[in-house]
Length: 279
Image (cartoon, rainbow, N blue to C red):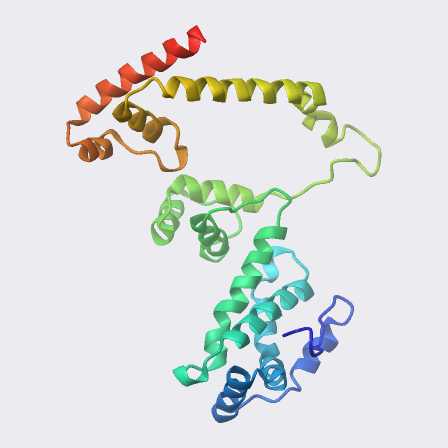
């Protein structure tokens, strides 16, 4: 859709001018908006799409301003938000009785959120859905920019439905700052001097990789010696760290006691160890 007509572009050098220009586009009435939406859906009318987008660019600017605390260029946030707006316009159905602005807010925020997650830190700070929710809410929920007390940590954890230690970890990540690996003033030690990983040397890296392959092969062969139930227990308890099961979970699955699952687990671990030593 964007390849067929030009839209205003926000850049760092013309940001003020861009903001003033988008305010000049008229706000559509509900009737006008519905008519344009139907023209787009029924006839793929790109002119209608352009009018819908232009009339809502000011909404993107307003939403993007709410993300100024993340240290990213406002112009980039606006451009990402505009992408979300375009996606919303393409999916907009006026016959559902919902105004485009209400529908578009989700898409605008989603694009901006993704952009921030990708670019706010060189080392990614939030990878799961829960971490992202914590990331985007922690700043606003903190009572101040400094140290959080135990009560505040637990209160935030309860509100966001995460563990207190996850709140602490995210706060540490948010408080961190990227730094240059080389000292531009050539004075004193540089981060590269003490961040060097000897394991990253090519020959060492290849040696470690080969050892990991051998271990993985040995473990696979050892697992093949277990009966079906024992293997299931070992894999569920030890080989799936992101979603490991408890003894009681497996007890319910196999309709035995948790103590019986523990006994099978211990026996299977001894067998695995014995097989891997022999090989």
